[in-house]
Length: 288
Image 1: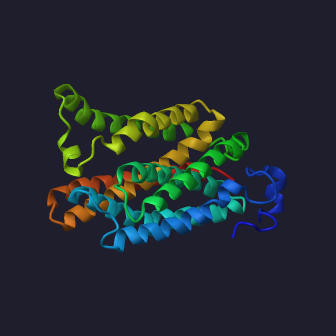
Image 2: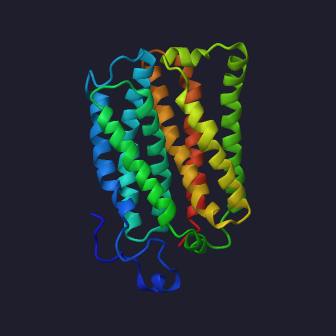
Image 3: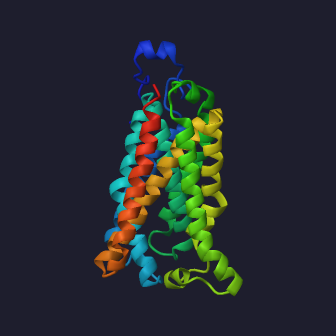
C-alpha cells in the first residue's frame, strides 16, 4: 500500500518544492499506519459489537467506550488510513491531517490502556498504544519542519488560526478547572468522576498536562511564524476535531438512552468540531 517506487508528485511541483518525507519511499513510521489502522478497525468493531468486550466497568464508562469505538470504527481509523495513503504520495496537507488524527489515536489509547479494565481487548489496546506512540515519535524526528513551512504561501491565515487554537485550549482549561479546582478544595471527587467509577479523569489529565499546553504553544509558534508552528498548529486543530467526534458520539449514545438534556450540548460540540475542521482546512488550503 505504501511501498510504491516513488511518490507521485508532479515533476513541476517537485522541482519547486522539496519533498517533506525522506527518501523515495514512505518512511517506516508512516507505514505503521497499516497495522495500526487494521488492528484498530478490528478492535473497535469488537469493542462496539461484542457483548462482553468490556467487563468490570460502570454503565456510564461502558457507554463512553462503546461510543468511542463507534467513532474510531467509522471515522478515526478510516481517516488515518486515507490520509496516510495520500501522505505517502507526497501530499503535505494529508501528512499534516494524518499527524492530527494520529495524535488523537494516541490520546485515545493512552486512556484505553490505563483506564479500561483488563479484558479481551487488553493486548490489542496495548499494541495500538505502542503503534501510535512509535509512529508519532518517528514523525517528530522524520518530518522536515522547515520544508513544511516552505510549502505554505504568505497568505496563510497563521495569526487567526493560531489565536483560534489558543482560544479553544483556554476554553477547555476553564471548563476542566471549573470542575476540578472546587472538587480539589473539598477533597471529594467530582460527580462526573464518580459516575464513571475511575480514580482520576484521564481526559482532564491528558488535556491539562499535555494536549492543551501543546495547543497553546503551537498557536503561539504559528502566530510568530515558527517552522514547527506550521506543522503542529493545524495538526492539533484536527486532533481536537477528531476528539470532538468521539465526544459528540458519546453524547448521542447517552441521548438515545434518555439523557435528553444533552441535546443542546451535543449541538454545540458538533458546531465546535465543524469550526475546528473548517479552520484547519482554511489554513491547509494555502499549502502546495
